[in-house]
Amino acid sequence: MLNGKERETEEERERLARYRIDGSSGVQPQDADYIPPLSYELEDLILARIPRSEYGKLCFVNKRCLSLLKSSELFSIRREIGAKESSVFMFACGESKWWEFDREFKSCRKLPVLPADFCFTSGDKESFCAGTHLLVSGREIDNLAVWRYELAVNRWFKGPSMINPRCLFASATCGPFAYVAGGIGLEPNSEVYNTAEKYNPDTKSWVPLPEMERRRKLCSGCYMDNKFFVIGGQNENGELTCGEFYDEGRNKWVLIAGMLEDDPVLAHHSPPLVAVVNNELYSLESFSNQLKVYLKESNTWKQLGQVPVRADLGRGWGVAFKSLGNELLVIGASISSASNCMAIYTCCPNPDGRELQWRLLDSGRNRLSHFILNCSVMVA
Image (cartoon, rainbow, N blue to C red; front, side, top):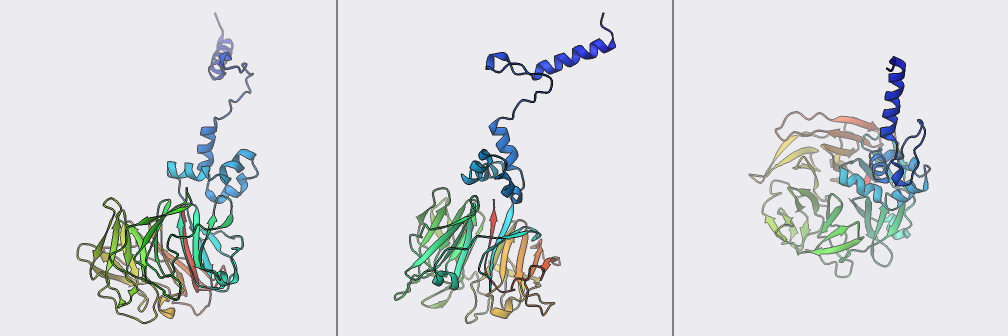
């Protein structure tokens, strides 16, 4: 009969035996200190859950981690398991490089220099994200061009060009894909487009979509109710108050008459400042700094209150107005300060009209200009 100490020893031997690798696998039983290695699949799942801000350190762990990052496989796993983080990519007036900020604007880093020609670097540009790609469109000396920044390898690459190279167009992001529509081509014709395209970052290619109901430039885009919306803009007849959306299921565009009918027509203003949070469409009036929400059933807008930045200073130009998860993000010159530095605010909007609670994330700490040339949010 075993005494207490012998029973404990016997139970420990049985417990260890359950964790040993069977001899038939070709691996011999180990001593009590042996810890079975993690499978690659489980290891990948663990790495994918590490905060994205720490990925720069993974490059120094081993060659396999570095390979996972460079191949974008780790970001594909994150997408599959729903591990998402938002980053804000920004290009401010007076800067030579793009900046990346975390969602709370507590950490930031400069991207590598975009290796385009002087014409592209100094000219007007438009930006949007698709998966882990930041795409920047602008004019080079010879033609309109697209440059893409790939987060996985921290590098800029040229292309791919759009099927119809354009500027002053609408864009929107849906998961790993991006949509563009409208805009104008190069001189001498400067044709106003009604064409649209979809970008796939996995294949690094564009595919054409059906033509819109209206030609339009200086328009804005957003993704809501599983549809790509294009709002406002101008054509050869002047300002457009209609919007339209692309229904991918039916592969067609549907016009929304009078969508911006209540907005006053201003000369030389920016495209409509719009953002979608929790499937609700919000707009920032560039002449009054008022936030509005779109009422889908009545095709009208309701005012919610004033935002804490000066959109009216440049008729909407130089202000960033974006969705950041379940919050609205506004960046620009603060209403309450005479400082020339950017102020950054977020709020969780409520379409029912409750008082807006704006949260100040930064006001001058990063010393960047308040005039934002380009801003895009990446979720990866």
